[in-house]
Length: 92
Length: 92
Image (tube, rainbow over all chains, first blue to last red; front, side, top):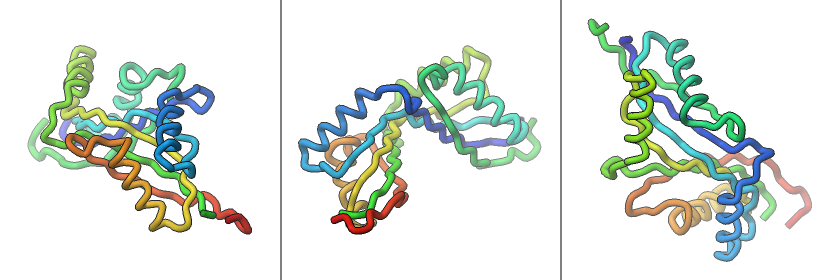
């Protein structure tokens, strides 16, 4: 437990799921004159810091965290980027 | 107006702004046993397709769209990635 990672998680609706919020944004943009904007989809973006033994462990934990709490696997997909930001020397 | 871009927009709360939703997620994760997770911040992720003359024009329009509709500049920051996905030959 001596490596610190920054995770950036993107949760999006599955392509087959309707996105009323995205449709509303697109309609709003169209009224504002942006008729050149299409296919607006709204998702969630989550940043967090995670302490783990190694990258593999960090990825496994993030998969569980996304499946259990951040995303609804029935209607949403997720993906994440992981960046190691620090190694705590001497810590355990 | 003959180039098509995919934009991925990330809207985040400014660092000085409290994020109760992020705190709730962190607390939930802690109760689920993930005590190694910190600094959870929740933002919005928006994907859209934009037709524009060139990349400069697409970026200018996205800046306006974010400032006017997608982000609240008082409490939120935004950034975006832009990828050209198609050039419509012969269209105008």
